Image (cartoon, rainbow, N blue to C red; front, side, top):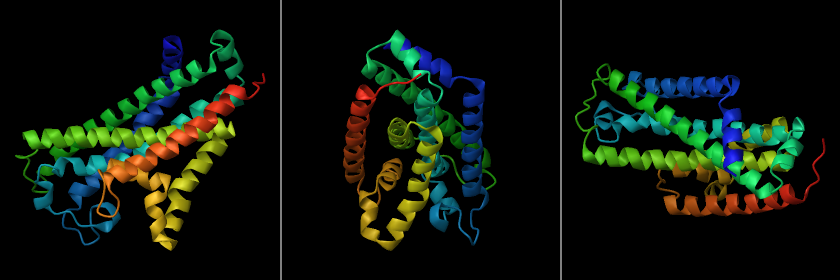
Amino acid sequence: MINVVIAELRKLRRPTLLLSTLLTVGLLSGLFTSLVFLRVGAKGGNGKRGEAITAAELSHATGFLYGFKLVGTFLGLVALCVFASQTAQEYTYGTLRNLLVRQPARMKVLAGKFISMKIFAAAMVIFAGTITISLSYALAGHAKVSTSLWSSGAAMHLLAQATLNIFIQTLSFGLFGMILGLLFRSPISAIAVGVIWTLILETILGAVISSTSKWLPGANFSNIGEGGSLLVSYKHSLAVTLCYLLLGSLIVSVLFKRRDVAN
């Protein structure tokens, strides 16, 4: 299985994939962090859903994490697309057959793919966190934000907690994409279904029937990244996420193990 992980990491570090992903993550991280600090006091708000985050709030121990948390959901969507495409394209290009010749144990191939993509997701989160935090310090003076509490022990604890939550969120979206990739066996179909469901259908369902929001997969993935909310607890989102992902993983594992593989 180690050889599968190494082989998958070699694919994931291709310049066309790695550089484009890092560029996307970097631009999104810079954009959302800049909006938070450059629009302090703006009438249209500078936070999620148009909320106004003041300089006093940004001066708290959590101030340097606002940009990181804002970009968290988009990290999940990037992971969904990468996981789905890297899984489904094995069927599209017909390379899965060659992989199974070298490693007949299909579950080892699947596990190796997941481990390598988990490493990729962790790298994305660390990269985004580095950019958002660095930019937060750079823009703090312009927004008249005090950074004295940002280096406290409480702030470091919150940073570790936020990083873990955003990683779980990113990995959840990514595994969801991997499940779709194995289910549809087409990168375009898997990505389209994942993005449309997460960005459009869940939004419509949540707006029309508000009680469904606490049971929708994407909404719960995002809520984990935020550390929970007043309406939906962190533990609830974690439990719902585990149920969805375990059930989906079980279904596609059986399909992956039993389906015939064509050239």
